[in-house]
Amino acid sequence: MEEDPIRLAGRLPGLDFPGLFEADGLRRLDEAFLERLGREDADLRRRLLELREERNPPPALEYSEWLLAAAPHLEAFVAGLFGIEGELAALRARVLAHDPVMAFKKEFVLKRGRRYHGPFAESFGELDRRLDERLSEGGAPPDRESAVARFALGALADPRGRAEDIAWLTRWCALALREPGARARMAGWVSFRLPRPVDHGHLVARRAVEGDTAGRVQGDPAAFRHRDGFRLTDPRMAGREVQGEVHYCIYCHDHDGDFCSKGFPGKKGEPDLGLKVDPLGNILTGCPLEEKISEMHRLQRDGHTLAALAVVMVDNPMVPVTGHRICNDCMKACIYQKQDPVDIPQIETRVLTDVLDLPWGVEIYGLLTRWNPLRRHQYRMKPYNGRKVLIAGMGPAGFTMAHHLTMEGCAVVGIDGLKIEPLPEALLRGPVRRY
Ligand code: SF4
Image (cartoon, rainbow, N blue to C red; front, top):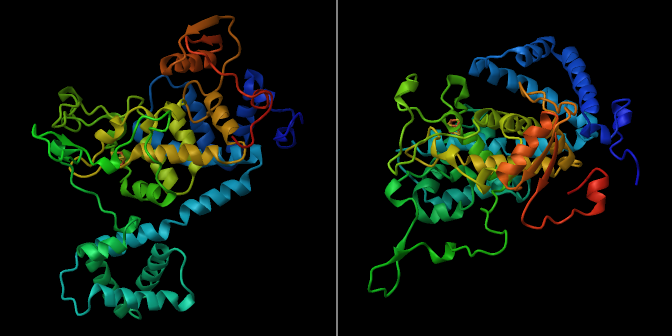
């Protein structure tokens, strides 16, 4: 096997792949990052060093703003280290390619179509055919939603010259939102997906069991999912759906309202009154780890997916086993209490899997567990401290404890009652390019 397939040494002299697992290698990596950050933004570097020294937590908003500014620098540094600048730029372009659809939804569907109360001279079908004719001027578009969005934004950019286009497109949007037949044509369009009211008495749709004399009810049989191996997690959203959720978020950290992270207060600014309880009796605690959710969303909105993952991993280094695989306390405490909350676990999962899908993505994730300069504490694994620890039970508590003890410099061995299958030799001995 090639000794340094990532070619780290070419980019950071003296560092090789095994060095990423050793305290000394991580120290050198940290120094190299600090040196680069100092060249790019001396204030960010100075604040990073202060944050590491301060015993008390910094003001929440100030820390959030520092994270948002520093995380893209970390992203660029890691991309350069692994030589994946091109792949990361391509990922960013894919994420940002959905922006026109998001802008169309905001500026046209919500601001114009939903508020339109004027007359309709044409049917939806007539307007839709007119739209098709205009769209096909440059050939039939493979992605109609995106083509409509670009067409509409083009019209908005020239409000005087294209006032007529804006007017009939507004009527088309209004009918698309109101007519059942038209809504079917928009099935799957993120731009026409509107939040539904939340009814705590009917969170799960149910129907009467046919012919049941006891009057029992059941969920929709078409939505039944059978326990079948490990395939029980929610289906993943497509990239555009995820960006739809990201843009639905209103990034509440900037007014200390990110209740998804901090918990929903009974009364804002009065912590002594405790947390709000929803109609089902759930205490709205928000994320148990106080993950920086709003900040993750802001970075993902701007196409900084690797930076978003690094920010998530400040508080949640074990992110692959959380998200919709474990709980949704964050969603329950989202500021949207009377309509669908932001689907945070879907966003988090997408952020994680998009990074894992990059070349060396698994190694990048692993590195960020051992070294993450965005953390105030445990930002890099400490040298061996002479303590040996045996952890019995490798469930979530066991492997999380193993992580934190390793970061503190302990030598840790984990055992479990279930048989732990060995990984293929190639995955153990060298870096994983594609997992
Ligand atoms: S997920 Fe909800 S509570 Fe959290 S920042 Fe976004 S809108 Fe606000």
